[in-house]
Length: 167
Ligand code: FES
Image (tube, rainbow, N blue to C red):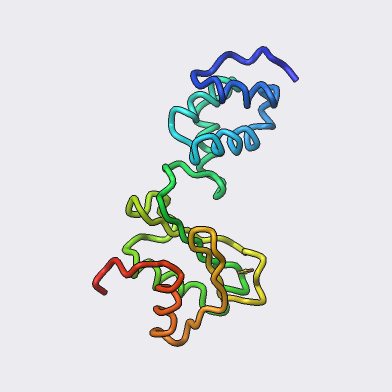
């Protein structure tokens, strides 16, 4: 470990970097911990990480935007994650995602959503036997009736996903 990293603007980010010794190979872990501070990686945070770790900002931004686990937008008040892993996909996960996009009026994987709701895809939630599944504000919803549109809408409504569009 080294403590010779230059100070960044946010002292909490400096602390995170010091904990990892400003090693370039610790960039992902540093970004992960910095994201936990604010719930996302703001442009200023990325700049602070680049400065503190003595890395080009383009590299820090490249890593942050490459990995799905990093958010570059502030979190919305409500979040929905639809599983598009193999088991869920073959059981209609894509149709579920499309229906939710329609209900909420947001695009899949647009982290900013509409400012209130955001919809993202995940690759597996460990509940393949209950596919297709999704998570709404932390609650796992299983065995969605993809082939019955009214029943699907009822389940989505009950899960707390509002009908925010007229279609
Ligand atoms: S593929 Fe969806 S829970 Fe595993």
